[in-house]
Length: 525
Image (cartoon, rainbow, N blue to C red):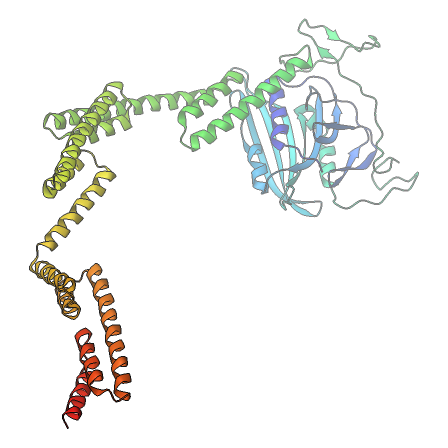
């Protein structure tokens, strides 16, 4: 599968026009035709046309062999696939006019070619010399099939010298009409097809001798074939046009035309993205390769518009700068800084930038001084003063670490306020009394004080201590009850009663009190 660019083919055509058109006469066509395969197409080609293959393109030509993709006096047929997803994208470059002294007309119609829907596109390229009427130099006809495949859009193009195109118009129509996608049947030896002469089989074209037309030199002389200088001189064309004494000069014009079109495309893309400076650069470079009055006028308009917008921006920036100066005189430094920054966003100015840097430094110095004051107040326990200093520093420069410092100070203030509340004071008193009772060994009374303190203000550390002490006292009481039960079962009732009474000192229980009462009555009998 071969790929080629229809845009490249158009550039070759346009470059010939830039170079001044074509010269040379066409070779006479033979009356024999043969089906040839190009890409996935089978096309009937006159046997007088020669195969062409170069730089990924393949096809046939008549006239002078193409050089560098195109050459003076050639008519070229190419087929291949354009790497596009839609056939409309392939038609877009065909509809474009090169601009400048080159004019383009085109006509398109929908047709069925080779049994598939396609667009038949015909365009004509003319050149206007000074005040003269535009004269056609190039004609081209293309077939773009609508059903794009994964590997691109299939198209067929044939074009070249307008005079050659007109001379071969019927043959071109016949070639397009003969297109088919399936392989045609082979011809029987010695048998001619209806209306078509010739005996060659598919893939075996008859290669005609290459008869190069003479090249007109700048001196007016004719460069003849090196093998013979006999024969009548080549007939000159009726059109006056520039000539080249080598294909190198023509190829340079082709390169310039290709570069100019590519640069203009880049400029249009940049302009669509909002990069006007980049677009103007590409347009100017395009004009350096191929002058174009329309494009030159467009660039001039863009430049004028940019200048006007720049002046308007300078005016707005100046107004914002004056507003900033007035706010600064009134001591409204933050508002002034905002205006200066807005001015810089509109128009970068060295003086305004220095003012902004100076104001930012001043605000930072004032904020840092207030932070230092806040830290000193906090270290001295003056939490309210510390919070005020930190808060004022934020009015100059908003910094996250200062906000975290304010949150920490406010937490300390809340804790201090809670510690001074009546509830907290009562809880602290009861807690201290409980500790004193615990030290005296009056554990159950200490536990009572702890529970009262927790009712006034719940403190996690005290709650943990109270729960542990209660567990300890309950265990001691249960141990004494077990000892008393054992003594009672042994008949040692007085000793058992003492153990039961001892358990009450650790953790009183109503059922134990009832058992003690019964045991005391038993001992009195």
